[in-house]
Amino acid sequence: MTQERQFTSPPPQRWWRLIVIGILLTLVNIAVYVLIPPQVLEQLGSFGYLGAFGSAALANATVLVPVPYYPLLLRLSQSFNPFGVGLAAAAGSVIGELTAYYVGRSGRGVFARTRFYTWVHRQLSHPWRAPFALFMLSAPPTPLFDVAGLLAGALGIRLWIFMLATFLGRLVRMAIVVLFGIAIG
Image 1: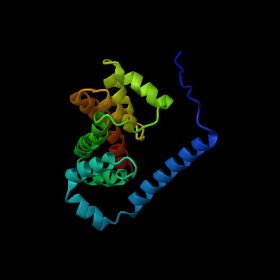
Image 2: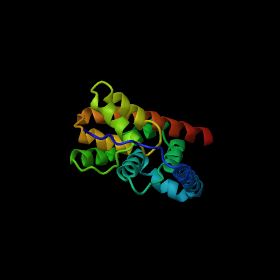
Image 3: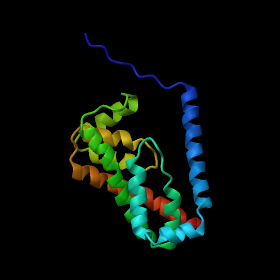
């Protein structure tokens, strides 16, 4: 007889920790935005769209160390064509997410099997739902997409499907960031 593992909700303290971490990361991004000196912006501005691409690629290639790149995108969207900044950042973001995809391809299990992991696994195992799930998970600014990227690689989702669905989701995310940058600029 096989035994199914029961998943339980995390204790309330864990939720509070996650909320506090989210608030702290938001405050760090706000502080970086406010504290970027105009001279640094001028220097970064010389990189323009390449700066948006590179910062998004670097930020999404790292999993353990969050890189606050939204403040830079906000500033760049105020100085450059916002459509170009959003496209460049979305493309860079997809390139950065390939790190998780290829780690998953290597076959190494690096995440615990949580309820979320099981749900994503079920969605990505279905050929018609996989692109939609990748799109939906890549659009909001959460670290949950790392699980999807790892599983997409592990399940052998075709690279072009992964990249296209992720790019479309990241276009939505970057459009929101860029529009916010225009609104506060």
